[in-house]
Image 1 (cartoon, one colour):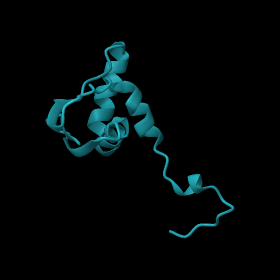
Image 2 (spheres, rainbow, N blue to C red):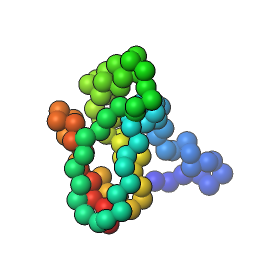
Image 3 (tube, helix red, strand yellow):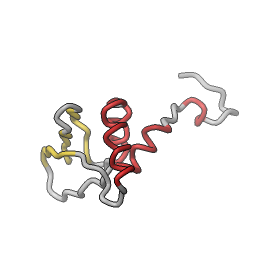
Image 4 (spheres, rainbow, N blue to C red):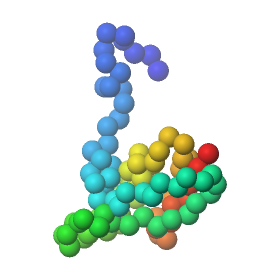
Length: 96
């Protein structure tokens, strides 16, 4: 991609406001210290009230791509996003 060096690179990056909001609804992912392949369920943050949990499931249902984007943004650098099965709510990760 060509861009003018006088213009900030930030304008060429797509900012996903919905993914940022979804991150606030997701329970923090556990930090696994051993290498390998992991499958886990993604759950709402336990600090959410009943309305927050309803919002979590609403965005889970209506915005699966943004939901997967939010999950991938939450991962540490040494963890690869392999897949996210939206219907089964299963995330597959690989820690290097």
